[in-house]
Amino acid sequence: MVQGKKALVTGSTSGIGLCIATTLARQGADVIINGFGDAEGALKHFQQCAGKGLYFSADLRYPSEIEALLQFVHSELGGIDILVNNAGIQHVSPIESFPPEQWDDILAVNLSAAFHTMRLAIPRLKSSNWGRIVNIASVHGLVASVNKSAYVASKHGLVGLTKTVALELATTCITANAICPGWVRTDLVQKQIDAKANSESLGVEQAAQKLLAEKQPSLQFTTPEQIAELVLFLCSPAADNIRGSTFNLDGGWTAQ
Ligand code: NAD
Image 1: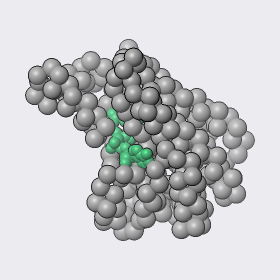
Image 2: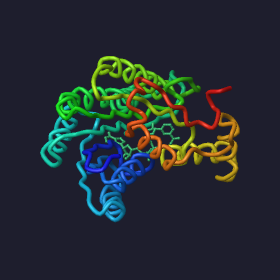
Image 3: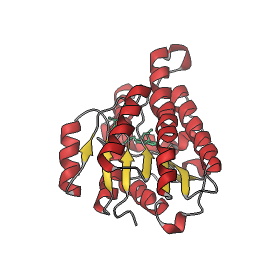
Image 4: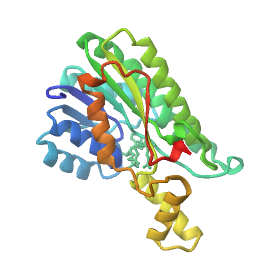
């Protein structure tokens, strides 16, 4: 299905993004990964799984670095077929004490970066006559939680942006959709579990179970593999006419 396709997965040095990138690569796609943290370790893991792979370190807060990233994709792969906007960051605080610079960074990475990657990638996707855009939003693109003003605003924005782009591309061979996971146990959520364990004097596993019990009726974390499999499905011919949709992988969170 994705054999020989050219893909960019942003924020793919850990968690969900790394799993999506390796899943696409194992199925034969040429993938470029991006992100911070242990980039060297991530690339090594990726290359071990995929047999090949390239990394570019753009900081997605800055449009000029996003332009350089897309330029790198085009020069290394000769085009792009699959764009997965996955990079995302979180900060938890009431709005009165929410640091303005955190607001700016979250909006830049979670929302504006997807605008820039899409505006730059779509002309190339059009020229290859087939394309998939998958934006990793969140249940917080559909419902809110306290103390997550920037995250919720950015993810609601990303869902709206996805719908708009899907409509603009509706008569082309390029689809755009959003995936909305509930809790997935990655670094981003582990920080919230650790904070909860500290603030409520709980063990880490107790805090994880409490976090699930508050929101996710299945009481199970969604896994990166489940999200990656959905990305693969969205790249299949069966998904040709799925456009501007949101897919909740949230253990029943938004059904309540
Ligand atoms: P993660 O922290 O493991 O991964 C985030 C990735 O984004 C990392 O590769 C990181 O280096 C990269 N990144 C952060 N800032 C960046 C920047 N300025 N420029 C480039 N890359 C940057 O977290 P994750 O849980 O795997 O999150 C992936 C996506 O899934 C995010 O968009 C997140 O909002 C979304 N999501 C996660 C959950 C969850 O429960 N973990 C739930 C719903 C949605």
